[in-house]
Length: 63
Image (cartoon, rainbow, N blue to C red; front, side):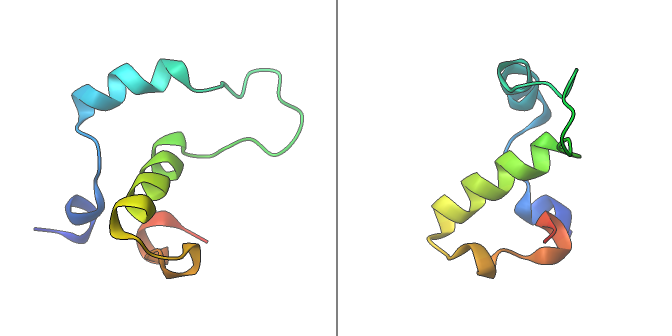
């Protein structure tokens, strides 16, 4: 199991259902989200693992 698979929270099928519910970056003037999936999966991973934000694996979820 690779590191990316270990931190993957949603299947592609689940993500296809969730993605349209998130706000889009269209017309956004501020800094847009680069990867909504990474952000949402980081939130869920943190909640499930019961860890602090600072303890999220940076190599997968970013700073």
